[in-house]
Image 1: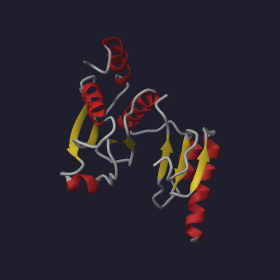
Image 2 (image 1 turned 30 degrees about the horizontal axis):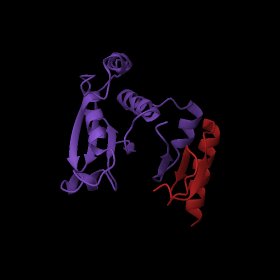
Image 3 (image 1 turned 180 degrees about the vertical axis):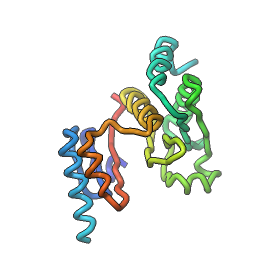
Image 4 (image 1 turned 90 degrees about the horizontal axis):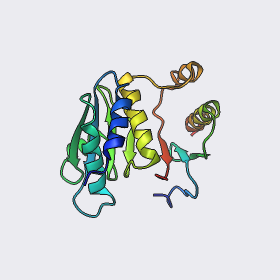
Length: 44
Length: 141
C-alpha cells in the first residue's frame, strides 16, 4: 500500500487517490488542498 | 498478557470520561495471513472494557461479506469508529503507539458528535456536496 501511494515519509495524506499532502500542515492549508482536490474532480 | 498496562488503563479511563454518547468500534479481521491481527483485536477488546460507553463488534473479513460491503473495508485489520452515524472513519492496521492516541481522539470526537476544527473550516466544508476520500499514511512511532 505504501508503495502504491509512493509513501516515503509520514504523515502523507492522499485525497481522492490523487492529491497529496506531504507532512503535517496547518488546518487552513489542509482545507485549501481538500477544496482544490474537489475542484479538480469537478473538472474531470 | 495484557497489552494495556494497568497504569495506562487508568489514564485511558480518565480520557474516555470525556465521552458523551456511546461509540461502537466495528472491527474486521481474519484468522490467517494477517499482520498484527491478533494483537489488534486484543488491544481493542481491552480498550472496550475501559468505558461502558464503548463497545466492540468483531467481524470476519472473509465470512461476513455483508458487513464488509456495508463498511467498504478492503483490507484488514480494519476498525470503524461510529455512533448512530457512520462518519466514514476507518483505521487500517494496528492502532498502536501514536496511533493509539489518534484512536482515542477519534472515539471522543465521535462520542461528542463534534470535531475540533475551526468554525470557518466547518463552514467551508459544509458546502462540499460530494464524497471526499482522505487516506492518511502514518507510522506508530
